[in-house]
Length: 149
Image (tube, rainbow, N blue to C red; front, side, top):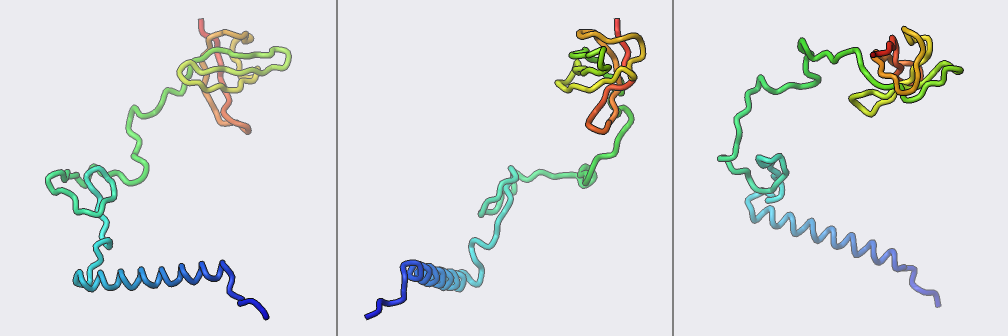
């Protein structure tokens, strides 16, 4: 005789379906008992910005002026413009190939420099320089490079 066609996977799926239906029935009954309101229906935000299921304490509420809220990027003000001239040190420079790299003095950034952008003389490793940066084809480049004393 042939075995029944019910496999382990089918039994598990049927158990899950019955459990889901039972949970739904229990939830419906609990909602009827609470006057049509599910206790987990509301989610609140407390004074720390965390999601909680209890109403927040009104004494911890802060008043916020609507004018202080800025949506999007804040408008630039006078003096917000960063200094376009940077200072740094020549980390590597190959005079035969005509290029090198400058390490910024304030940040860990390194910038490519070509010999055509050097204003006075040639550069050597360790020289202190001032420069401006521009976006090139492969990243930021140091331009208008001049040696400092």
